[in-house]
Image (cartoon, rainbow, N blue to C red; front, top):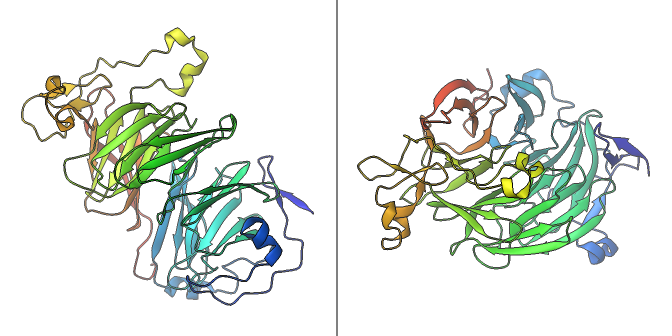
Length: 437
């Protein structure tokens, strides 16, 4: 089998086989045709394809006149770029400075998911939208240097999510997760999960700590796979169903939120210890995204309430690994946070981790947990309640926000005093539901 390099020392199977015959569009309740032997062996068909550029054959006038629908937006592993799936293809944007890197578009060729691998030319894409470019039951491996798909993974049910590492491809279905070797797309692991319609899964990008987090088989449970240690840890994170979770870059910390959306919990992925409990607010909310800063000192959260919250984390950052164990004590910040979002009157108190807390927190042994919660350290209120995904920027103490209305924000916060974040940049990178101008 011929191989093609992706520029990062990762080789992928090249599409030098005969092109796969075009398949008829499948409904979401139908199963795509798959070779019986492959189905019996792995429950998935691995094929190599010679699919052409999805923008081929479409003139600029056709692309410009197509009304745009932004289906998804996701940051890459280092938050330096983000990818958007639209009803006419996909686009890649650089965050700092903000600019469109490239786009691949054709009318009526929807892409629901686009997963980047840092900044290399390899992408994983899944069809979606009103008229999918590819069946939503397939993951297409796209090489932008060649301008075509070089491989595909076909399944019996709709693909809910895709995650990439330099050595792994992870595909999330409703009740199962498949882990593949990136070089030859060989199936390495299958994981059964509770119903996972949101495609929840987190994969540490660090080359030294291959860690995967996914829903377990019980409500509110997170399963953590430490592949380097061949160890599995089950963490009972919430009593309610999971809504969102994220891993720190080294995979040592896990942040989770339930469908209630009021609390964010931080866990040690090695032993499952709960390290911190953070309160987003008092009312129920739908959590859209959770992101750790690269040094695991901060955590950003977005929800349908229209406010992005930043919390200070207690634990040692990855840079502490080189220090002696006795020096790796929990960080205690002496700064006084003024950005308390607690509804209680009076001056907020600073919790041990640096986040504001209720003035009644000293009675936490008597009053309910609500009164001893750690509230957000800094906040940014979006002009309107949009579906937003958050990340941390290259600039110190900066937060990036991408909305499914086609908006991009860059904000900064005061690491000493917290409070309201300052908007540094705003761009409307896509006019949704209308033709591009």
